[in-house]
Amino acid sequence: MKTKTALLFIALTLCLVFFSASANADCTTDRCYGQIERVYLSSSQLYIATDGDERNLDCTATADVYITILDTDPNFNRYYAMMLTAMSTKTPVGLRIVTGSDGCTIAYTYMGN
Image (cartoon, rainbow, N blue to C red; front, side):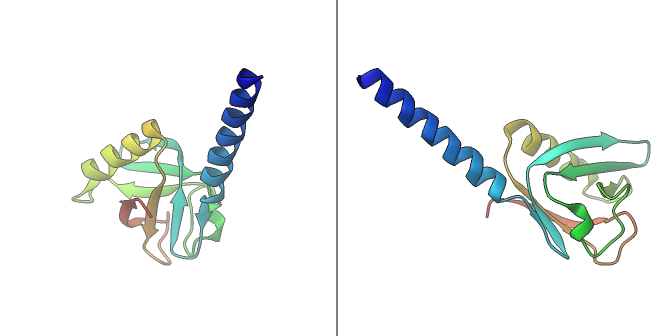
């Protein structure tokens, strides 16, 4: 009986963690906060897709999905490392965009609430 109760407790805990993590995914007019779903590197920029809806941003997201970081940005390598870390550790990240930008260019990023 204790094993059944313990398994039920674990299952409920996992459900709470899953739903609380997915509830944090959000894109507003100037930022997306949530999990990184995809990172795509081209010859001149980094494309980032989150679990939020990038169409809510006040910018033109590439393919309605991607926020971009140009490789000419002085913090490109730092941003790239942060995105890979956030994606591999499933840590939510905030991506603040340049309002009205073509490609939804990153202004800054943050981890934590």
